[in-house]
Amino acid sequence: MKLDYGKKGIELEIDPNWNTKIIQPVEQIPIVNPIEAIRDAIKNPLGNLSLKAIIKNRKKIKSVCIVVSDGTRPVPTHLILEGLLRELNDYGIKEKHTGVLIATGLHRPSRKEEINRILGVISTSDIKVINHIATDKKSLVSLHNSYNEIPIYINKYYYESDLKILTGYVEPHFFFGFSGGYKSIVPGLAGAETILANHSAEKIASPYARFGIQENNPLPEHSSIHAKIVGVDFTIYVCINKNHEITQIAAGDVELVHKRLVDYQNKHVFKEIQEPFDIVVCGNGGYPLDLNLYQAVKSMAIGEMAVKRGGTIISVNECSEGVGKGQDKFKELIFSEMNPKEIYNKILQKEIVVPDQWQIQVLTRILMKSEIYLVSSMEEEEIGNIGLKYADTVENAIKNSLIKHGSDANILILPNGPQILPLINI
Image 1 (spheres, rainbow, N blue to C red):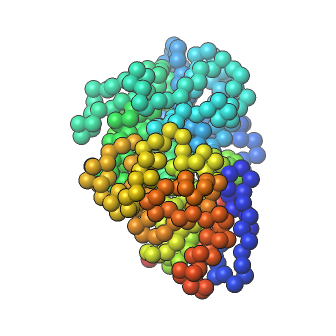
Image 2: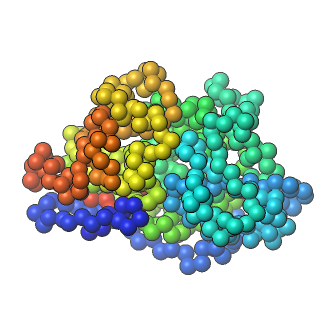
Image 3: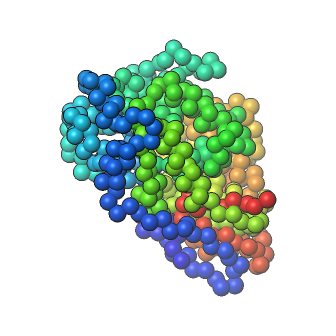
């Protein structure tokens, strides 16, 4: 069978003697004409005001900021942009007044080839394209408002634009509950200090900071408080299937749009299982989500949902970028020679406070529960020394795991990343 891996996938030869269970996503039919469907959603928004009415009420708009996801996300942004720009043009907004702002959070800036993929046919237009850089104080504005004495730093171009539009996709997120919505602003467009406050060790340690959980989750709660101060005028979000095709579209009020698509995800993505598994094989859904080891931690959190304590997670991610360019502190920590419990406690005790600490915090939490084999394009000496195990193939990782757990160990295979998530029925 084929597992999502990079751009082409990877074959797994299943031994008939293995005790395996495979869970694949339910089929989600793509929208036939997504650009026209996007235009239709914009014309029929959730909430009180249409985009046309908002523009008419503003009378004179000199700057429009369209926020998009960065190059590590599989959302077909080019389709959203094409539909949105056609609508804006019909409403009298010219391209020269429009800018596309890439919500990177603390990720590296998107590269030229990634920007071309994000923009699609408009990559040759006169539209301004800006990478948000959370550490560049000159590109940020500091708001006087604060929450729990944490200042709000936000992208200056976004904050000062006359019309603010968010775009992106909604899917379960490994500590934010779900992507999309106010997450596009904080952490997407926030300054490093604000992001660190949102992604603090205490918040990440919450039992509610998990896939699919919104209620009582401190991260989206904190994000929404900041983002409401910053403001947003209109949103367009989508859901996608395992082939990264658009299956659902909603536009209009940010909270109503997010709720609509979260409800859809809750019905289609989670699959109940009766008990935890000895071995879980999982990945991040292929390119671009499996670009590097930093991003691959999300797939390990999928495995965490289904593996028994003391079990084995086999993380299948290409990691063509290695550990991850720009993830220096993450790399430093996975080569620190500390054990997972030591790193985790140091983060909670604020002895380690650095960008990327949340990723290493989640990784060490999982390593304290189960062992993790990494199957990737990386060499063994590249995966650090805090407990990750190396395997050159998925088959060999499974064979090694069966030595530990016994030949009758139960094995769960999740071939399509976060498109399907296991939920233990307690």
